[in-house]
Amino acid sequence: MDHAEFWTIVESSKATSGGSFDGYADSLASRLEALPPEKIIAFQRTFDELRNKAYSWDLWGAAYVIGGGCSDDAFTDFRSWLISMGRETYEKALVDPESLATVTIGPNGEEDAFFEEFAYMAARAYEEKTGRNMTYESASSPAEPSGIEWEEDGDDLAQRYPKLHAKYGES
Image 1 (cartoon, one colour):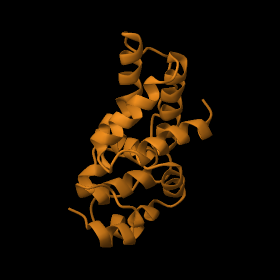
Image 2 (spheres, rainbow, N blue to C red):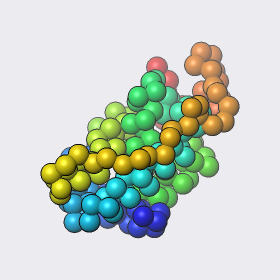
Image 3 (cartoon, rainbow, N blue to C red):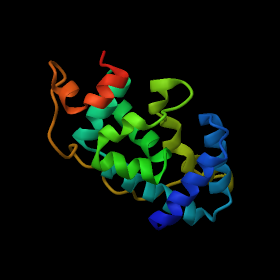
Image 4 (cartoon, rainbow, N blue to C red):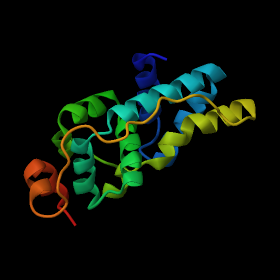
């Protein structure tokens, strides 16, 4: 699946979600279930590729500031949320994580920046459509995030992300 088709599915699902993550998940599942099984797998592969591309210290630092902390599992969920926000938000954040300071995260605030369920929507749709678990060979995840690691202690995060820090503070 090319990126244009992937983003069309994501953005049309978001547009018809009614503003809730449950509505988003249902809308996305419905769109994916309408696809042939091989396209559902292709959607998941594209999702995996984009999530791997967002595996950077820069984005992890942004997630840490937004969430008041961010474990490795939470960062996986953050990257799922970032993809769920659509192409423009995703691409801007890859270049400048501070761009997330202008994004409305969700109705529940910062906790909505960790959308775990989004990562499982293709598997859910595949199982609904075929009655089988989705199996496919995925690209391996990077061993380490790209970029330069930040320091949890001190002012490193506040200095790197002044806009996000001003909006969300840091716990």
